[in-house]
Length: 254
Image (cartoon, rainbow, N blue to C red):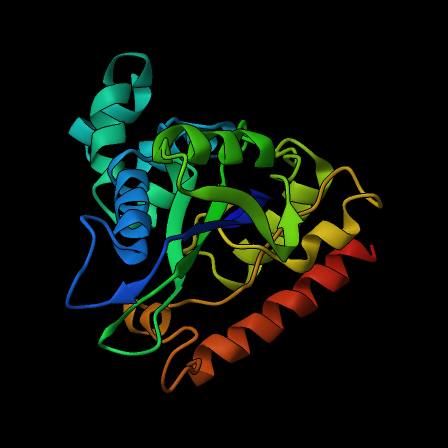
């Protein structure tokens, strides 16, 4: 899988303030309840799913390798798009490919079990699909939470719009593809949209085509360990990565 672009990144902060008081005399909605309801609305009404250029190119590349029934589905997206989107939305891994995702990552409120909090704060991290923007995400949050008691503002120090997309018909893409096949003839290279933020953004002013690729064969267990306990790579996977980089450098120098 060769990344020809990546999603944008923005964290949105939600906050609310209330009178507080003793927990024996609670109001109908506490600060925690108000903010929790706002987050629940965001989770219930995600930004719309759609097939972007990288995902369509992915299906164009891998579609012919599927059995006949699935080939027909991918070859006729003008007709099967709603069905394909529903299927992709049902799995977190593929849902991230077709929409701007929202992930509540921080919630802060309260200090004691018998005291009503006077404030609550939450951070929602968005990964932005090409076609959406930081501004459209914040507008979506304001429109969806729709509560004057909840303040919405852009949070965090890092923000990035979705990257521009690199061309798969370029000489550089074909060079990378040939290096991959030289090391792993049984592997089919396919373009896709990277759903995480990478350092490739720092090179966007230097080249029209930037490809995000890590030549590693990962199994499901490897993916599940990322940023978790016992994160590691297999020895063979590491060796193949070195061979691929070597092959790429040799071919680029010819």
